[in-house]
Image (cartoon, rainbow, N blue to C red):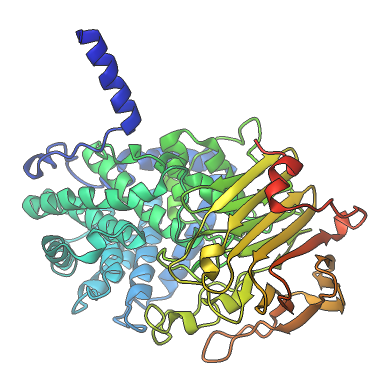
Length: 615
């Protein structure tokens, strides 16, 4: 074989294998390009001048800063510092409080030079440094507190006295990096995890190590070498399309810390060793954009709440991967005040680019997570929006909710997911997990058969998806979720203009009790095979198209105490006993803006790709 042919074969093999894995230098060389001096983490010294210029020129940045500065002013008046206070097994609330305060106060100090802000941040850091530990048994607490003190140490280095530097440095070492070193050396579970703990813990340890890298080079090099190897396990979960199977809340947590880690490596060492090239990460922001509905609420599957939260990492991702849609979307989220306030990192990572030309797709199937998002339009607060969940019940933080949906129309969330309960409930992450209403199948907008939970090991794939014009659909095979109860179960959801069709097909269900479920805060008026929902001055109509003889009922959607109470939530159900081998249950949902439209022509789910068009 000639050399040219060998070369072409090698190129083909490499192409099939995908991008090369990150190349990590030997431990003793990993700090070779360390940036001298401080600050070197996330926002080095030259970024201060850039941000000051933006403040003078960009009204949006100035508005963000006004809110951040207002929070810093409030902290000057409130002299209370963080305390060693566990809630359940967690110190996490105090770690996050310290982190937020340090970023806020240090940012205002760097922009204004007023030492009052620096000194108030130092009070927080010294208080945390005096803790007996940072709760390493729940290592997220340790990682976030390490992050907090490391940023303060780096950003306020010039202000700290020699004694303060020593106190804070010793705390980072003793309570943070040495505890992390123990876990890396024994191969602790989060070092091999593929979920959010991996990025948070590795990210916190990376920032701590880089802050002290010139003073503790041997330990810093070891931790960095371990963290860069470990984080790849979790980052591979973004492939192929940026989704995060733990849900949008944990997408934000995991991705934020992934970005903290990569940004710190880049600013301190000039490289992220190729981590940002891991497939899927460059498009991670797509998931956030599509999972937020027109009301600003998230499609909150798994242990996620409906709040969007702020995500300054979207600005970093926009700049890093030339994704101006990400910057536009995050500005929209913050400017529309769908979050409490902007983060200081919204300032440091701000991307001013306007909305790009063209449009985003109206429907997306995120393949690894197997969730589908459909909407009738962008930038329309009255748009119809549907989130549809398939996927894997075994995923970390998952609920038994395969087939679950949420629905918005005319500016109202009509079908809601109750989200997580109190993590401190007995056995929440253990044997009692599936006994809690919000986590078991009874509390989901899906089918509940014979009043039994779905199989916790089940996987439900999206088997068909299509999007053409204003017609979008997806079909999930839920059969494994109801193994032993029915032979086959499929659910399809179609968004046809502004109408939503929810169709279930169940085989070998004779004698089984089948219950269709939808949780809502709307007032419900029952009319047999119709239900009229009213909320916020708007109306939504649901109609059972098949089978004949079934009717809507209303029951409470509020779980019993001590579970979190939701007295305003009702559950709209359709309950019946299977009388023959196969059943088709079809519910049409019409907002008042689509009340004049005739019902769509019905047909089996197998025909949907032809009937509704498939790309």
